[in-house]
Structure formats: C-alpha cells, structure tokens
Image 1 (tube, rainbow, N blue to C red):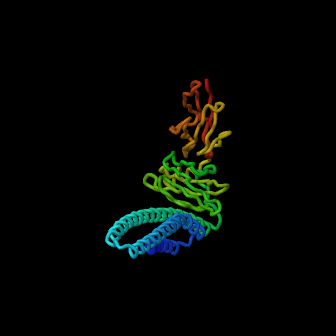
Image 2: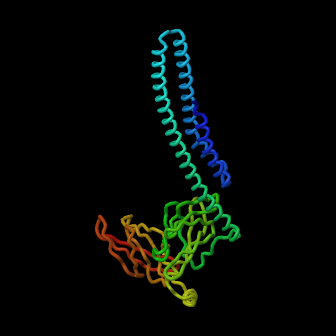
Length: 330
C-alpha cells in the first residue's frame, strides 16, 4: 500500500499550522517566508525520499509476486511453491512494517523541528512588534522631542550589555537590545522588560513611591538613559525639592566624572566607577577596582590594596552632577 496519503496528510497539518501563524501576524512577511522555507526544507526532502523509497519497494514487491505466479503456473509442485510464496510474503510484510515505522519516526521528528522553528519565529516577531509599537508611540506622544533632562541623572551612551545604575544602585537599567532604525531600545529595569522609543519613559517602584527611567536619545547603536530616581530616593517632599532646586548648586569639580562613568587613575592601577552622587553634593558612591560600592564624603579618602602596594582614592568634591577624584600609590 502506498504511504503517500500519510505523508501528504502530515504535510497538510504542518501547512495548516503555518497558515494560521501567517494569518495571525502581518509584521514581516519576508521573515515568515524565510523561516518557513528553512524549517520545511528538511521535512519536505525527508518526506520525498521516504515516499520514493516506499514506492520503489512496492514496485519490487509487485515484480516478485508476478515472477512467483509465473513460476507456479509452469510447475506441478504448486503446494511447495505456495508455501515458499507465503514465507516470502511474510518476510516482505515485516520489512515493509519496519520501513513504515522508520518513516513515521522521521516524520514526527521533522514536524517537531518545524514547530520549534515556528515558536522561535513567533517570539522574535512579538518582540519586534513591541519595539516598533514603542517607537511609534514615543514619536506620536513626544512630537519628536526627547525627554527633559531637568532634574534627571543622565548617563553616557550605553551599548547592548551595559547597565545604568540610579539611586545608589537601587534602580538598574540593563540595555538588552537597541534598534536605531526603528528608534527604540529594549531595557530590563530591575528585572522587568520594557521596550521604549526615543523620549519614552517607564515607571519603576522605589521605596514607598516610584520614579522614572527615560530614553534620552539613540545614536550609533547606543542609548542614553536618564532618571529622576536619585531625587525620589532622597525621600524629600515636593516642597523640599523646590527649596533644594532654588538653592545654588555646588560648583562642578575640575575634570569631574558623571554617574555611570569609569575613571582610570594612578597610571591605570585604579579603576573607579562612579555609581551615584548625593543630591546635596556631600558625597559620592564609588566602586574601586571592583563592583562593591561605598559612599565617600567630599574631601575624604579610601585606601585600596593593589598588586603593587597600597593606594589612596580621594573624593575632591561633588557638584553639578559631577564628582572630582584623585589617587596616589606608594
């Protein structure tokens, strides 16, 4: 019996599933076509080979039966020939059953591979849709203007895999994907995934309240982020914030560094990461040759052991969103 109906039925089920996916999403037709082509290629080739092999076996069986029938008509020993024919038919039946089981296993494996490829494609399409929607929403709401940097800590441009820290490390924004052409970026903010367009913002819980992380701009495959979480973490009231804003800001230290920057000091022996700045300009949170941060007041120093001896890092001043650093060794 030909196995083509079984093969065609399996392929029909897979094609029906593909049709449902394609009808449900019109995000990127070329991606769907390429992915389906790659996924269906092995299955179609295996099905074609299996069908050809089965058909050849059936043709061979028909020729053998015809030869036996011809021999029976010419020989008087019909009973012996009948017995021999029965044995041959049993052997062929067993062989055909083995081939059918092998075909079924290969078809099932290929169907699972197609289903896995389609699931992966569906996830990628969903993420692309979210990023595209975020970019469109940001452009429509913001009229092409970025988020205001007033009252925010702004980072340097960050590439994929880099993390921005705000509010002394209580808020962490990890850049997982940047789409300059689409004008959007995908972030993990304190473990929560969000897709934002240039100028878009997201709210994040902080203490008893909430603060904002914003995409200040996208350029050259990097995202510049900003946040007011440092202000929210201080716990001050709106009136207190207004009085602080009215006060004259401390003068920026010479050759200062902003939050999120890394300073190389003492001929490269020390790498100082500026995690955050106190709102009142009294201290800076830094990490020296590692990830462990500590709060250092302006004018104070910390000692660090290196392979070449003890070194000292001094916070010379904090003001205007920048921190001054000096270091000496030996």
